[in-house]
Length: 426
Ligand code: PSV
Ligand code: MN
Ligand code: MN
Image: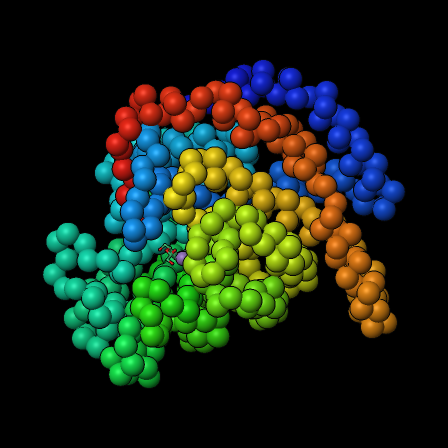
């Protein structure tokens, strides 16, 4: 199913009058504060977030999975779904593939379908947290950290292979997330596991094309519940530094222990020019992978505030690879992704409103109250009319969720693909 521009345009018509009133109000309000709302609209319009191929179906938990119906069961259907998201939002302009789940059968056809939706290929993800069907050796006790040379080597070769696949599609980066760790004390030697991981990552890094980046993701626990080899940003940074200039840390919002100050981590990594990728989601307890902004929207805003500051002030930090890494258990995955994209853009737009000069001056004066007022004034501004306008200008939907429902997208997908189709993924 493909959504045509005319379908969106005709549904936009009914929303236009109300939108114009709200936009005028928002622009005037910003204008009175000396903020150019049009410049913010442009920045929102340019902001693109990769959709992971594994987020397009119902994820489930270890207790069960409830299919949503009409889920994509192959790579081309996944690209079609992202095409729907991109047509509606103008924000989902790329896909992040997970190999081997998404290994293309026909590269030209895959590229053609992606191009027909204006979708590019973002970071490719390797998978050494599962044993594949014809794998010779098992990752049960680790992959890049494994104490056995042959197992480490199999995992290294897999990562190199993933990069080769990505290269054929036009990707420019490899994301490595490892499940390696230990579930019980004494199970593994911490130092050896870390040393093995560092050596393995260096081997992979050496083989990457020169215009590629490597992103090293960290996570404190799960699936191992005693220790994880790459447990935190410090370990990730240490490994990235030892690999080289094109290796970076990747922050996944769900990969922190409760109450961790993620915005401070962002600031630290950007200062050092080592923040490469970002996975959005939200959580109450752990790696819950909930809809972005569903639980802690103010925290998301504070994180964006540091990202915006870093993008303006840390020229040594590369452009960031943005991605949603969420899972959908009880919502329509596409509706959930539309909500996540909206939450990301809201936080970004609000962060762009922060009066950085006045904030610096208030910090200098130790005027703590004023500092908080400045941040919360930006956070409490309704930026949704700016988002709507950015979509309208890009021929996308003023209200993506309403258009999705008006066009009966899910019903159409179910009619086409059936009720039992299953997307490969987490
Ligand atoms: C597992 O926690 C995980 O969600 C990581 O965040 C990775 O980015 C993703 O899976 C895909 O491997
Ligand atoms: Mn992630
Ligand atoms: Mn995760």
